[in-house]
Image (cartoon, rainbow, N blue to C red; front, side, top):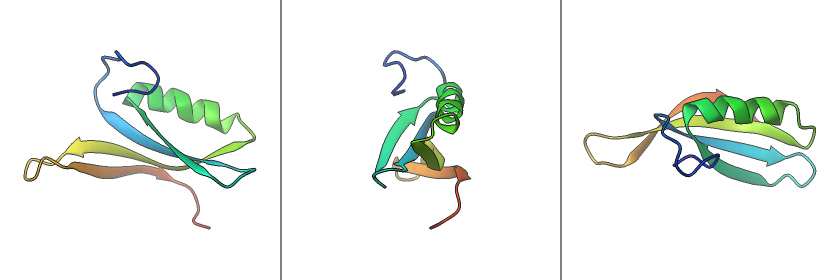
Length: 77
């Protein structure tokens, strides 16, 4: 499900991890691929947030558990 719109019909689900630069707290959001691009663009323009990681979530054919594929990650601290 896409956090941007509950009835989003775009394919794929991505997990986006953001960090608040002021508090240091991380927040996880889930978006379709199209809305992920929009959200990353919004975060890049926001001085208070930074992208920590973005991962495509896929179903594993073997165990039916979500499997992540890294799309982007910032420098480790």
